[in-house]
Length: 321
Image 1 (spheres, rainbow, N blue to C red):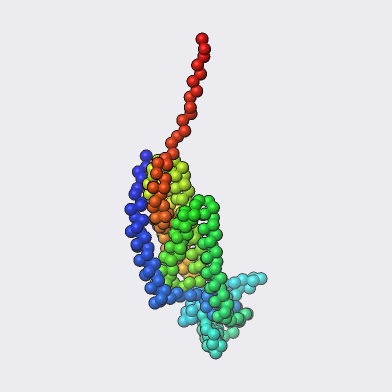
Image 2: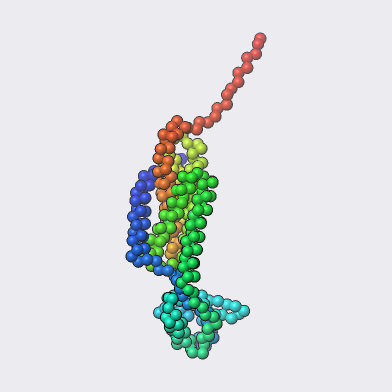
């Protein structure tokens, strides 16, 4: 028989640790802010075609080669291909000052021509992303995250109970704050790719939490105790191996991306790794701790409510002589 571990002892200490980390993250937001990527700030958008490299062969040019030519600017470079013609999309941070943006465009063009040759760089498309568009994208991203949380809350409420749903949502918000604590203090670039990592953790964390809540619901049906913490301890113990194995195997993938990739994909992997660890931790301690607090009077409300197996009544028939 599996030994039931007393996870409930860690509910309060883990809550204190999490609150301290989140307050530390709030201090980071006020002092350091968030390093928004070019997806959320005004910037210059260019598509360029490079017809020759230093060796005279344009086919060998990669996005890393283009990026290395303009390292003094905050840019992202994406390789494009249309009808067999290879080009590069360059996005650079700018501001609302037109003169500064023109200077930025000229500086990037100068850096590219210095590396690849004056007649080797051709600008195919050029556009400027204004502050209103970047602000609109940021607002839409926040709305997307909020709507996601609301839909998860509705789903968990329908499937389980309102307090179970609240515990799951608190765990998700906790994971989000932990990731933003890391993002603010590490000053990793926050882009649409990083936002995708945050939303990915929403899905992963709620899945891990639902597994535990489903076991709690199952154990409640056959509970022989009036102490709700004992039910939580048994449910977390029953799903512990599954939670650890799922987290570790997923970490293999995220750490591989972290080691073998660069740029925005590496940023995605870093945030994903932090979120995976936080998601496993919050599913076992934060979500369960919230539910335990809400049902702290569960014993008195259900005193004596113990499920006993039904016994069939025997029928005695007396026959007359």
